[in-house]
Length: 86
Image (cartoon, rainbow, N blue to C red; front, side, top):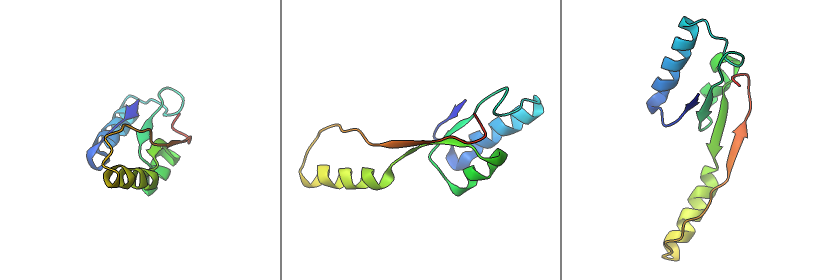
């Protein structure tokens, strides 16, 4: 499962709760990858895997686009952190 845009991680909590109810072993029976690294994701289930945007670079790129009045579409780097959930 890839958990995107979960407001305050409520969707993530629901998924973890459901996995426990179904007696699934996260990382064996199912995998969970969450979007955007937070300190809490290092702790949940002994570590959730995450895909995170490089927000500092996103801010720099956005500023450059605004200042240059550019309407270009550009790529932003991202990082995959693999932990126990996959």
